[in-house]
Length: 102
Image (tube, rainbow, N blue to C red; front, side):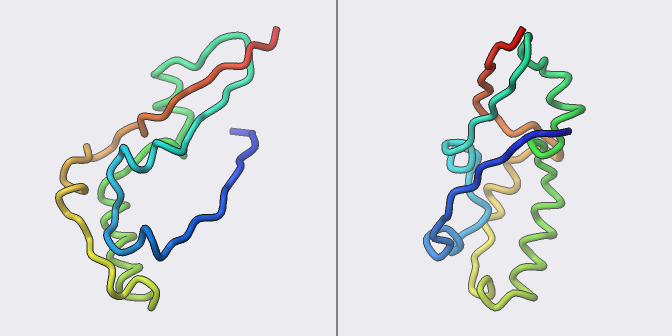
């Protein structure tokens, strides 16, 4: 997949007390812009847009590793309620915007 990404600085101390964030908190600042003649299908998003796929167990393992190996996350609280609400693998429910190019 080719494309561009824009990242805005965040104050991590404000968000890293309890992780993971809920899906609503994650997707609020996210918008995916596709340029082309047709919008992407749900199937295409699920198979080709891997950065938009959440793997619950990968998130669980990453949070465990961070809390054990990164001093900035040693006091982090893992919200297992949020983790347990995730499907084992799911598409991040982001807003998809199409810019038509013919």
